[in-house]
Image 1 (cartoon, rainbow, N blue to C red):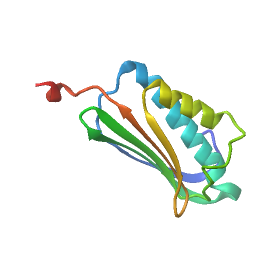
Image 2: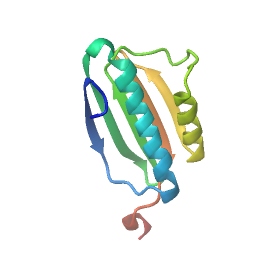
Image 3: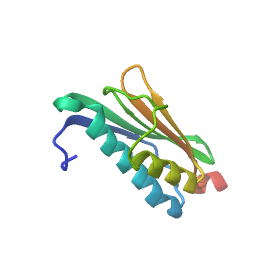
Image 4: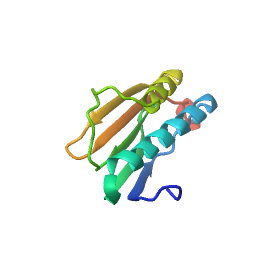
Length: 124
């Protein structure tokens, strides 16, 4: 956030999940790209707003990442001119995830369901 001149705030709700080590870098890049895009495009003209990052377990083998903002929104069906969306799609495929972009009543939502490693307690 320090690298941007923004009034947007980021909130997090991160559940503990075991992520395969080969998925850590792609997940980090997905979160970074989504946050950067939200900061740059969801809050034009210095508008204030909130970007929420949540990670939860769906079941013992899957987690759900949601990044939602209350900005100006976008039309997810419109073709993107930048590399960002293509990068995120490719990274989601790389980790075997299911990606969705949605326009919300206020803002936008990126959701990614992806496989996780079973927790040590789950294996017993």
